[in-house]
Image (cartoon, rainbow, N blue to C red; front, top):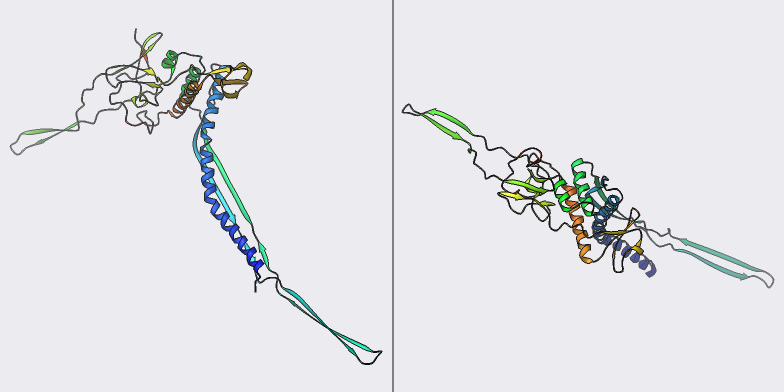
Length: 334
């Protein structure tokens, strides 16, 4: 029969095993939240490192990676092993002494040993988790040009007008009208009837997208899908007529401060950390909010690309209904 102590040890082992199994889902939830919490650090540290790079070299090429996927895996493995019955080893010794005469004594000893197989208990537990980010370095020249102008603006090296006129807006490739054809067939009275197949081209109101630059008015042909707030970097307030494009009003460049060390910052400054031997900081919480907003615009520029025949990227929604009428590169109106 198994002793009380043996049952207690076995019960403790089972409780430990069950607790490990129950912790797997909790650990997975914790790891998922943990990897999600690093997004802020991944984004902002990239932005700050590039800003410091452009402070050193105004015409540098940004070092930017796009975060594509995140993976969290949790693995709990438990392999317990118990064997029974208990280890029971007993030895019984019986000694009988017999006296035959006063000088002669005979002793007889009987020894009986009982032994059962040893009880065994083993426990192997593995608690392992893996957290990974999948990143894609940006190498597309157009994306890098957009980021370079944006970082130059964020570092205070260029003005809002420079950003407006040098930011490479994705151009619209336009779309053709529905095909139109005619079919002529004779009627029973000997006449011919012509039927038009397809929608005839409808006249569209003329829309002009223009940039007010130092050299004059630049007329361009942007893809309207990328001019919609709140995520647009270059935006349009309307969708018809003559449209003056402008920089998103939430995008500012008056917030960044830097010094060679923390002692160069004023009292009450909010530290952004050391990046490329520069101590970056902002003066107040309002400027800190502008920094985070700038980081979101960097993400926007990172993901912008013409991935379809129309030049529109997925997820941008329906474009403004009236396309620009000018094709090809931007031209300067004299």
